[in-house]
Length: 260
Ligand code: COA
Image 1 (cartoon, rainbow, N blue to C red):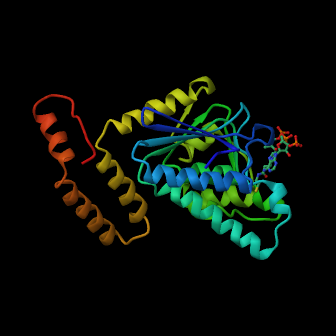
Image 2 (cartoon, rainbow, N blue to C red; image 1 turned 180 degrees about the horizontal axis):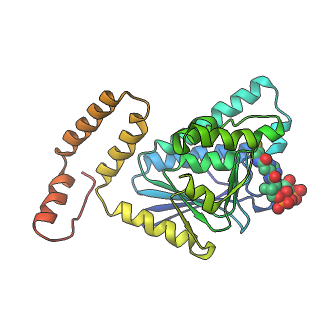
Image 3 (cartoon, helix red, strand yellow; image 1 turned 120 degrees about the vertical axis):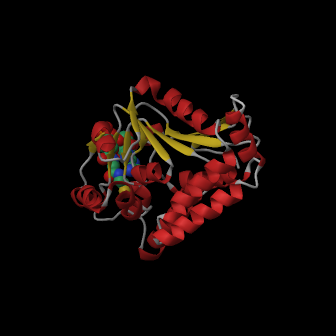
């Protein structure tokens, strides 16, 4: 698929995805969502890609939300279909099996905040701003905000953000656990890459199973989640990577993982 609204490049195993509608603050129209769906599938299936960084073009915005022009035209059935489509795209990204980092370089509002939350980690520049302002528009979050935000920051803070529609800055987002790290704007992409490379230096099968255990475990009872964890622990013992990782430690050398 040729992308009209995304920039996409792969460098040393890292896919850099840039939402590229800076004149509309990278708002998520149907075209962006269709292209993001293609990207999410590529991340999941292309072995050349080992992890990804998602960001927005221009100095002002990561993503300023779903495209309000599109939303203004929708009726109840296509509205629901749009929400389901968007939710599926973000879920595919979240379950692609490889680490995805959001590099949030400005406004991350509505669908932008939801997109960032579907990534596994979030690094924000000092000028980043977060919020779920949908209620102010007479709509409600539709790309997972009511579900992922309380899972990330707790029910009380999530309801505060959703019910007030307030915009918070990067420091506050960090304080409540919405973002993992805040860095100066000029260092954002380098910091995201450094973090991702550190993850990619570890056993990729172990990374994949850790992502899966945390994702699935949150929906399970503690006993079910612990069993899933133990099953993964056992499964990893059948991999060459585990032998390499433990052997390298015992031999006081750096491991060389193959993902097998
Ligand atoms: N959907 C469609 N277009 C959007 C958009 C969105 N979510 N957010 C911004 N834009 C467009 C604006 O319409 C404007 O386009 P124009 O130049 O053709 O008029 C352009 O992006 C720049 O935005 P502007 O509002 O002029 O920038 P600003 O710096 O004054 O304000 C925001 C920035 C983010 C505060 C403001 O754009 C805003 O409130 N956006 C909507 C946020 C929102 O409610 N998101 C949730 C949607 S569900």
